[in-house]
Amino acid sequence: MSESNTKYIFPTPIYISNIGRKFTNQEKITIEEFAEDSTFYQSNAFSNNKFVLNDKNLSLLKKNCEEHMSTFILNDLSIADVQPYITQSWVTISGINGYQYEHYHPNSLFSGILYVSGSNEDFTAFSRPKNASQIQLRKSKQIDENSDRFFVNLETGKIVIFPSYLYHSVPRVFSEKRIVIAFNIFVKGELGSESSADYLSL
Image (cartoon, rainbow, N blue to C red; front, side):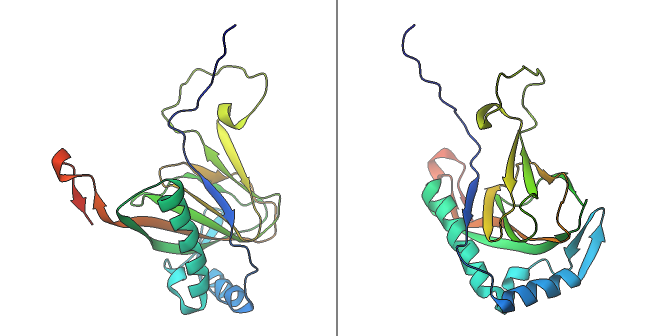
């Protein structure tokens, strides 16, 4: 058999890293205050403040998120002529046996999750895009490239950034108190080109 080379084209990029430091006491207190001032919906509570990273006590945390955001969008994806920025940000609180239904984030280009606390057994499940084939072929082994779901386990300080159209969920919470900061991202700058009649200045 001649030499072959399997390529995975048009992949969905997901950025996974860690802020590389512990949360300060002031950050923990502030996040807990947002968690207490929240509204319960289905199986989780969401902070009533939807711009938590604009709080002065979380300014360093916002800077950490912005640095990772820029690394992913501007460097890893080589996106040019725009400046990404965080639009909304909120705290999500879940208890044991809680869950988050499968969803995506409209009106944003990218979204992020920053894990604050919880169990290492907790995870976020990302699903294959909905236009995937309905034919289900059996697999001799499960790998990332042929799986319908991709799991990211919780680790304090871990940050995950992904395209906002990507469906994700939390099937079950194993910890007594799982806290994350979620945020959305848009861009300012120039999109497209005048010669292609798809130019947009934001």
